[in-house]
Length: 390
Image (tube, rainbow, N blue to C red; front, side, top):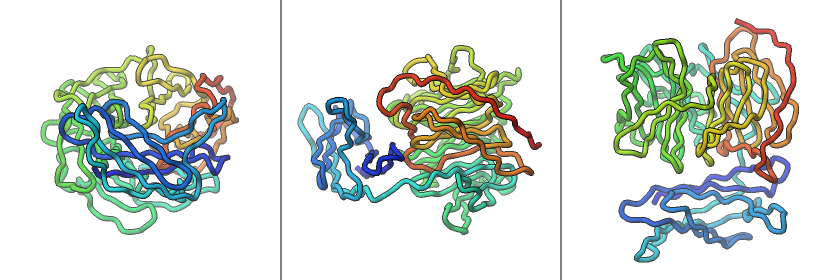
């Protein structure tokens, strides 16, 4: 089943607030649901998935209106998964170890420009890399992938090392945007086919890179594709921003799970989207409105978007980790704690280059929209005076 477990902390203030994401490869055949056993330390849990979903999130539960976490810090747990259908429960998978000593890295961003990439956090600029846009990151193994148009290849480098290697060469498309899908460990790429000039979506497993496949071809005339994100959990969806020949930018959705790939335009109450990111555990989109600089949260199950923060700037890229939302307008990076209604922090990393995109390096990637209840937070109103560097 290839069971894997990832640990992150939804609360930066509580060391014992431990959440785990457990994923596995789905089995062929008829499966009603999966049973997940977690034992050891302070827990003895039996969890059941909804239908045949191949993941489960071990998170807080409420007892007398007090949030508690079944997993504790500095403990070891054994995890096993078994499939269930009308015939009963199948053979359990091999046991894997879940250690809550594994911590999310410090709050870091990878800021990508047209000339380089660099790590950035509250303490300032860290390591720099030769990687240029478009870039995608495997946040679990801390591997960075980027497209080199000169040799028409995808290159790869560890964020913690210097060695650069060729991951994929002799591509058939000029890649303009990429997304790493970390449940299936696949790299998605979108761009223009060098032979047909049509825009296409491709994907490749990071373990077996020779198994590259074309997922979808856009037959309508298109100028560019940007901001690709992939949701592989419940829904099997890919989203991107598409500049059409008339100059209008549309938010597009592709249903990856169907035999016939179906593309549709998403209408978010007439919003003009300039950037987007995805909560992988909920499937909700966070989008920035080009006309007024507001960032909104859009549940995947409905088109009703809720305003979260007013940035007072033209947002070009957004990303998130367990507690923070980050955005940039190309010249500055700003952040806000979406759970605490705090005042945004504004960073000015460089004066001589333009930031194209930012990416969180946290494996969790799930801001707690509101820690106690899931009610809508009031919008944040503030004003910033910015110097724009071109």
